Image 1 (tube, helix red, strand yellow):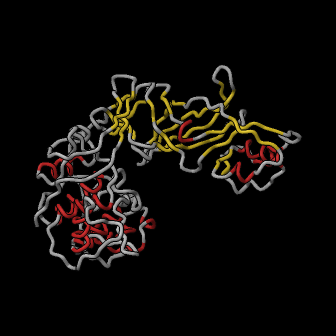
Image 2 (cartoon, helix red, strand yellow; image 1 turned 90 degrees about the horizontal axis):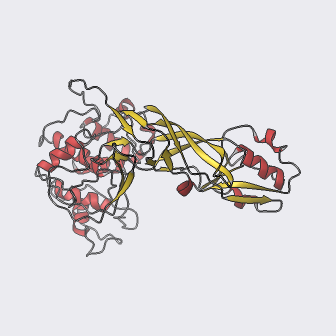
Image 3 (cartoon, rainbow, N blue to C red; image 1 turned 180 degrees about the horizontal axis):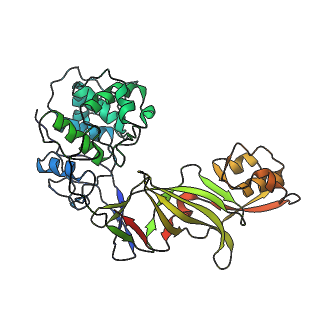
Length: 420
């Protein structure tokens, strides 16, 4: 079987790069790609989890990077891009006739690749003869595609529960194909080999690992000793002593809050809050220090910026996706924007898509007379009922209004030491 991957097409991507010897953090914005052959990439360090898969495929001219010598391993892959990968990777005779997808024009860059991926059984369309070429492809769909195109089969449904702690998250249509892919040894899970994360968008690193393992199964390449290959018993290696890496005070950590579009608290309250790291925090050579989807546990506290009182997030604990925990000292800016609550307002509009501090919920309830706030997301703390009395008799109250996308970006207030 001849295997080739020579080009992908992707959009602009950004990575957070930090210099460990200085306190500055600079975003690295990357221009639209024009691909060129290379065998190593400056954003794929030797200890990056997918480095051996990427390096071996690059050495065989199966994959390529970008003109700036990057690979952008965490960049998502679309269905069209994956069709192009499949076309270059696997030589297979057609098994069905082509169809005309209504959303893939004849002059679309991946039109012929999409048709070939369909004819060879790797990819199918959606109802109404749609292909959705720009849709990011989930990890489970990549594995289903490889199982279908490479004719993997399995009737052993116990494989999924045996290897995956999140097997209940696998979509029904994907269960048998993923069981087959697992038995073939092509599934690679990072950062925790027990979690498939089936609906998560596949990255360039994910796809590289899956493709490489498919080549291993086909006898085209040698197996790589990796702790992240599902079902593989890693060979003993020389133990390495974890190195203490210091991320300097002043470094910015990009975060997001997925539970609500805004947060309302009173000026006086303290409310627990958990944020999610929005993108990898990496060194200048591409080593991931803080993985995306890590959790930052902390709380909103009363604060002032010298002239106005407001609220400020204080980070207390950093939890990696694999469960590793670190104490962290980081804060947001002081948020002083307010929203006025008075009797007669439309409470539904106020609390729509909002997370409320317990005191804020009590204030809204007391001022407006609305007692139906229990169904809204209430951040922890004292019960609403015990706090309502603090606001009874007030005709108006000003709440701090927080926009998580812009107000809660964190800055380290002391060095963060990691053992990596």
